[in-house]
Length: 86
Image (cartoon, rainbow, N blue to C red; front, side):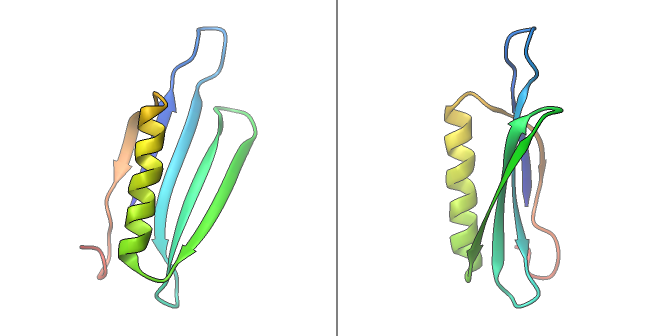
């Protein structure tokens, strides 16, 4: 599951972005990745581990909702894939 969000600033500034993704690891756990920064500039990547898929999805949805409230718009989304997907 992955979302790419972007906030459009003034014409003189580069757009800010946030990318949120969940991936299952080889041991059956789940990792939530949150990357943010300015398009074409430095980025920050945060990673959080979860044992349960539902906990990872809840954290994903919370992170998404926070960014939407901050004025970011969804530019790209991709759902869960694979045998443990839905």
